[in-house]
Image 1 (cartoon, one colour):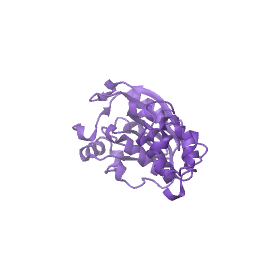
Image 2 (image 1 turned 60 degrees about the vertical axis):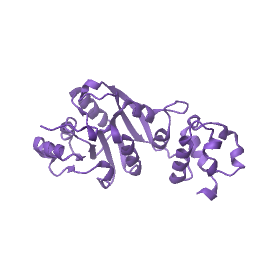
Image 3 (image 1 turned 90 degrees about the vertical axis):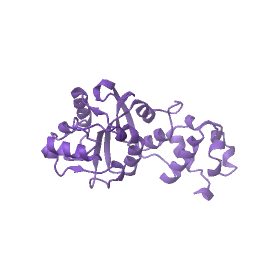
Image 4 (image 1 turned 30 degrees about the horizontal axis):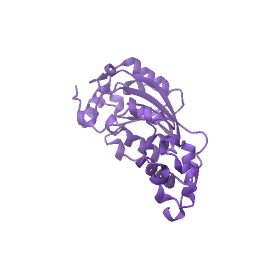
Length: 254
């Protein structure tokens, strides 16, 4: 057997119905290369190994879990990347799909890593802490709408699929959980460039209680700052409005 490690945010899925539901969701979009993040005790892994014509890899940091997985599922030999997901090289050449019961303590960082690989990521089906899942799917005007919402929605369509009860895990987490799916947006968001767009979004939400005029003052010239849109606060702007606003950023700040 294996020991659960709180330091790694380990809450392993044990409910077979939820595992099957995640795999069914995954199969609604075709793929030939699949990466599982944090297989842990292998509850989901054993279903994924059965998928036909799929090049499967799993990334797991915990050495004890790696040994347990290979011993329990011999087919995994040579398919496990024994590293932190946040430090690995891109796992495949070409397009691939990502799935996982993501460690809650690094779920935001996992998403930023997915953004780095967005040109090759076909879809993501993942278990998140419910409040993170809600934040990802939130639209403007919602108090949970923030940096992560905008940056992910700029490149992916977010689908909030279903919630998962605490008792479906070992040990039960103290927070609610939910599964979401990310699919690349069909038409690219209009923006000046990714670096400017990201900088604008982060600056706007860094002081979210202030009007945009005060929060992003350093990124625009005085004349532009007189426009009405700067009377709004960050959470009132749609993803598209942030994209359009990036074109007005002062050249001196780029």
